[in-house]
Length: 256
Image (cartoon, rainbow, N blue to C red):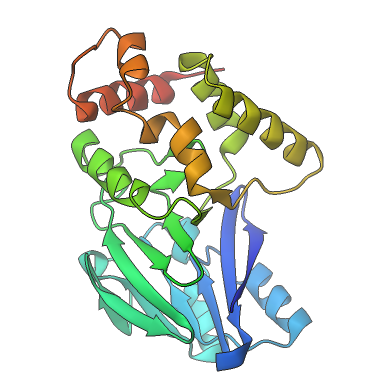
């Protein structure tokens, strides 16, 4: 029904471009810069119709003014960041549903990385655009939110269908894998994913998107309620949000 392309930008960002030929829609998610998007669209002869923004950080919205000058594309973003993303045409928040061509788009508020971060789930195509909330084998730093907020956000995303493809905002997977294996060395799913990631990066290929069921099995930030991880931190019986805070702190301090 739709095709999705992952376009590298800046140092380690990904911009996601969705094309719905049947409905004449081309949608870009989190364009941190305009040049890669312009080049990609020009090569294919596509006209940009919509821009989705998950949060206000410059490496996710920096290209919006130039792209809108080109196309007058409709800008859609989180209602909770209406004062931080200029000139949005439509804003949405937790529980909102809207339609883009063939797709029903569900919006989830996912605070933690920023206080107003959101994620977009394209229901029919099983596509999750998670911004800087959920990464492959990782999650975003807590610049504005609390560990409890981020754990709640990740728990919401974890409940989506297992065949969902997770399109996140950065190529951090190799470093995330090294950290994850340091705290969960006996996880066979994690070992397999780490090997897959190493092979992809050796070929210069993106590790994004990933499959949500694989993330649930291997990503420690989605597994803060796993007794084994709690035991690793000497926190057996602790609430998952508390274990999550320990995992996030360990990742922040990790130098491997």
